[in-house]
Length: 213
Image (cartoon, rainbow, N blue to C red; front, side, top):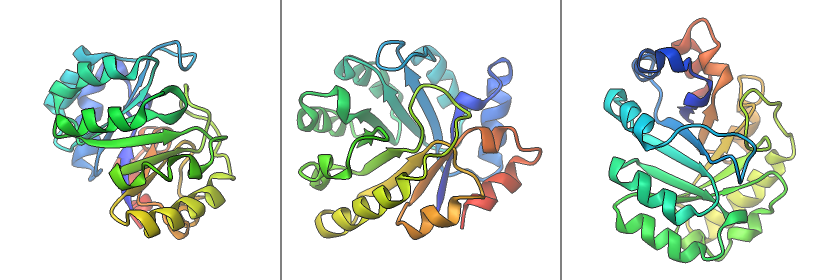
């Protein structure tokens, strides 16, 4: 299991310190939540701050767009060369076109599904994706409780991807901890995003290792 701590839960007054700590503690990716205050009721960070994160991170960036006008934001963040850029299927009218655009920058494209969105909604896009991110909370804020229905949803997605594109990874974001990590592993999940669980833990290395099962 790969672990991508979400900097949404970091101390923004000591952002460089926290990013360096999670990288030194052995995380696999650095998850960056970009919210525009329109698609979700929260406003987070733009390319200036993410550029600073990229400079101090020794692990690849995983940028999760929770925005309207996805193409505009892809063009803003593509110069930072993250490993992944993910966008919400609920907000995109032309997902295949945007997938191609992200890949044209040499970045791996991913699609995000809100808790209510069925995995079958990406069936005809899976062949062109590197990752599907399943939200296990309603997007917008950190520290929310895990929505249990993501487990059967992940199993359905796992069956689909094994049939269509076994190389496509499954990521889950929201309320992840050592209490549900084994269920996620059994469901076929490859990457977990953990914010509060990692950043509020007294020992970040111990927290990350408890999820890398």
